[in-house]
Length: 76
Image (tube, rainbow, N blue to C red; front, side, top):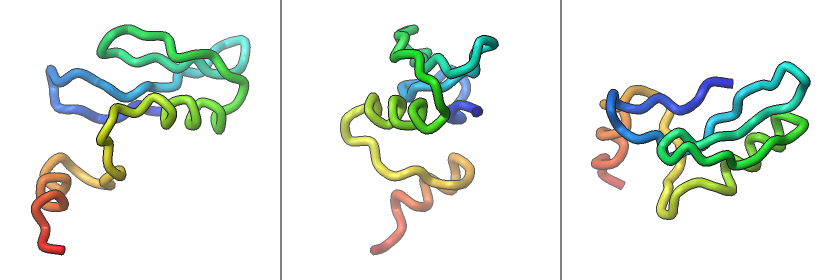
């Protein structure tokens, strides 16, 4: 499961799930090298990532960084 794409040099504030050889997933946040936990299933990994999202985090935008800028400034 790939982690979120960020601009080069920007801290990755969202956890990323890494599959383990023994099975299950290790969820880490690269910005502070925090281990958020180890879980058995990909669904549990997604829940762990979601539980540790930064405050004020909005919905995901499917697209490029330019698409994000357009979505943020789009008229309602």
